[in-house]
Image 1 (cartoon, chains in turn brown, cyan):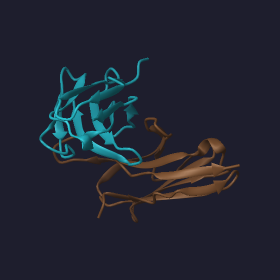
Image 2: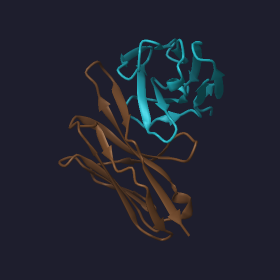
Image 3: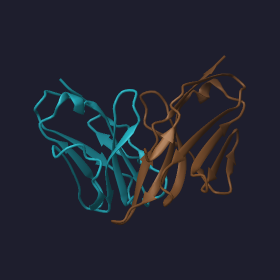
Length: 113
Length: 113
């Protein structure tokens, strides 16, 4: 089983739609979770951290379900500028010390007018 | 302040040549990561440094790849006897600690002809 499973999409949605992405991880020892956004031919950039209590930043809501080992990202009122690849990410403590940050393969989103 | 700096931004090399890629992380960031991204693919973890030591080298694809970090700062990724399948964008990222969000450089686009 892959360390992380993420639906590659693409998701094609109209402007104003609500879209949700899920990501499952295999290691229950995972520590910290994030969603990143990557635009075409650009480096990934942090979108938001994910907390067990859930957190919201404007139109974006992130949730973590440790029992079921998945994280989710909800985008409300989609904008054309939301078109990008969304990467789920987690930092895993490793036995040799420190953390290893793993990226999912990404889910592509296309928002159309 | 300065972000993560990578050089060169583009590198074209002939098959069989050695290449050296450089990453200058954000000052004070102890964790440094190297990833590789082929066209249309996700990020492939290569190696992680905590200070000058590399607790996790598990992602290096072969013994042609090596990396070092000196002074807890600059890191170099060396690929010996390059092959065409090494062509990709090589991304470096740093963070204050291993489990905090990563800050990426713009990447080095390597093309092996």
